[in-house]
Image (cartoon, rainbow, N blue to C red):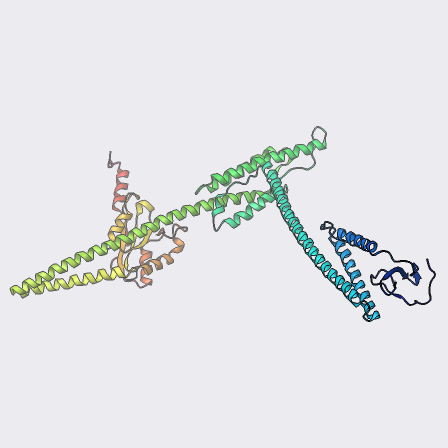
Length: 511
């Protein structure tokens, strides 16, 4: 190695490769002599290595770099490869800058060679940048795909874990006799939300072991561990029995038997607690109320379904009644039109024969027919017009009960007779039957006035009220409804005769 030099002698220039501080230029080519930190590494007058040797060395260096760059890129090695490529790019930039400085220093000496090398270095830099960008995009795409796979795997794992938790809870609940059976109120629009809350609380009570209680300190064969095992087994067995009884009550309760179903579960609770007296076993009071509420919701749904069926039957009957009224009005109008035509023909013949007196009599009858036709048209057009009736049936419903309704039938007594058919033991007595232009409003007003005394508070279409005929007459007077006839007493002829015959021991029909 040469000793340090205080100044740089002529012939030394900045190394265009950027690896050394200075390099010797002999006027035709670069020599291998270099200066780093003021120290020369070789004698510049030594012969220069043949071009083919330097070219081979350069190619080896380039090949090594290319091999490193072409190495397989993975998600984990992408960052390091990108860093190495950036370092190579920076080095190329330094070499370009050095060559540019040499070109400026020589002022055009070997300008063609320098320009070629500069262009080659720039092309190499552009190619390196493109290659690095493409590799970064590829690595980014692979990384995004891996991240998506990880997200899907985590989602599937969460689903599986949730299914495991649900399955484990179901097994635990079924071990306590609580099964996920179908409740009738689940399809109810008004009861489904309340049922869901109740059943959730029932599950929590079983899941967290709050449904049934027993003593905590109990010994069996002088062993506290065996005593604890015995208590837990008894609690599990009794809870299964209680839950089975509650489920059975929910599935068997129907319209009208709610009270027996509740008493059955209460009795089961008492028997279970009696069997577990030795360990102070008892069904939790809050849990017991939840199971009773579950039964009540089932009964309410059955009652609602039954009421809807009754209401539907009554709607259909009302439509049939309306169709009958329309048919009667239509038939009556057709009859009156035929009769009117007959009268017109008769009047025409009489006047042609000169019998004006008889023709005038028929003309007066024709005016009556015209009035009846107009009344039929009015009844057909005005659906609120009709007859209001107040009737009673002592033999079927007892004293002080009346039915208040309305009908649009042409002959209102036909409706009263239909109500007293084979479904009741005796015919109805009529207390009032009058026509009104707004029979619907009159009926509704009477229903509102006696609403608290309605026999059926669930179904408003059941028009029976616990009032006397005299009270209905007084209500009509307050509403200023004109009634020509109103009977406050009931004949009840069939009922009174039947009762008298039974009291006297007389033979009845069919004996």
